[in-house]
Image (cartoon, rainbow, N blue to C red; front, side, top):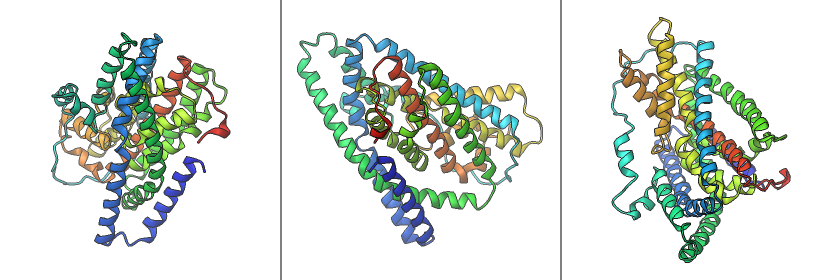
Length: 409
């Protein structure tokens, strides 16, 4: 059975559980949250070892084949370009379509939100290499260590051959384990979908946020269904760009209903290898970087969310200067969300509201009930970007073995 079908079955069963079970019962809701937490932890369990061992081999092979610069340039270009496209899409959609106002609430701020940029920079160089390998949320830390090991081991491959042989074996071993984990996570989708449905139903029944959700859906269809395939067609001369979208189904399911970029990463790598035929030296390099830095989905939903908040508080037209500040801030700060695998969009929105001030310091609370769904859409955009972007890099570096559609997992 295809992997995406297994995940779809998990989604359907989870939806049915949310509709049938007495979720208002504290014991039932507590059990659902407990099972959900176990599966989320289970899904993230293999991420760091996979990033580290695959990263070492990827960097070593890319440098040995003199492709490290070309791969880095293409990856960086696509990350920046995709984030810019998504940010502009958010600006254009919310400027063209005026969404209804959201009723003002009087909730009090109970949490302080910050990106902790200084701590993020410090975490890149922990007290020991073991701490780098153990870092579970900010994937740039183990990836940086993997980059250094892979880079240095390519200087003299004769001397470091035993190390590379060990790393290569461990990379294949961890990948095999990740395949098992991704198969089990199809069962975990039941708990993930059940919890998401409960949250979504409580938000949807108010009707307050429905127009904004519809805008997110339209933007997703336009960007992932039209813009990305068109870019792929012209950049890679691929006559069948929708194959990549088909290969991304499992990742899209997982990212949307979990809202977790780290949880989606093993699925991205697996489908990149077994469905799209992306070679390990590229997938081990591009997918982690996309997961860490390509957060244009957060920029898109935050731009739309902030302007919805603006229009809810004021009847005055928003100036071009303010639109430029909002979009520029969302675009720039989106690259700093790597340490937040889930919930990053709402954190970014809170930071923008606080930074902008002018009475907007606590205005992000208007969207707090809808925060999990907003973050789901952001993760959905980012998962699609990672799949399309990594495919482009693989084609441009000629590190891909195209598979027939019938052989997609």
